[in-house]
Length: 134
Ligand code: T46
View 1: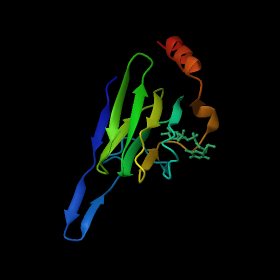
View 2 (view 1 turned 180 degrees about the vertical axis):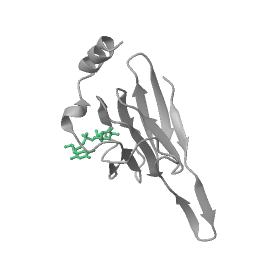
View 3 (view 1 turned 90 degrees about the vertical axis):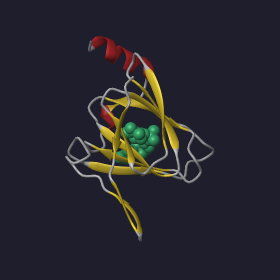
View 4 (view 1 turned 90 degrees about the horizontal axis):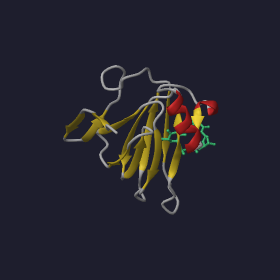
């Protein structure tokens, strides 16, 4: 599937670097929530779900990890290892995160508040949703 990476502007000066995320400049939805994933234990993978309505941008602000995206037909994996690169993860895309570096901090910008009933955590249910929405 097509991977959409967002190049976030990195502003460097003699003090260091700064990256900003702002709607609509570089985030394509109204930002409702921010969370981050860190302290990964024993390289345990995460994710293994899709969202019915949630759109997100994931940025590895420290270290690196891989994210596999699956639209129901095709799977593509991408490495996130740059704090100025955002991965746009649209609704109804299955995601798996793995290969976390020890220092990885994965920050996620989300279009909706947390809603457990927006998650599809069963891959066969995800495939059924995809089939019924063609
Ligand atoms: C996603 C990937 C990239 C909350 O209470 N509020 C929140 O905003 C979030 C994100 C999670 N939680 C709770 C729900 C679970 O009890 O935190 C626990 C861990 O969440 P989950 O197992 O869904 O975490 P991941 O890493 O598998 O998935 C997360 C996001 O949940 C998900 O939306 O797309 O990161």
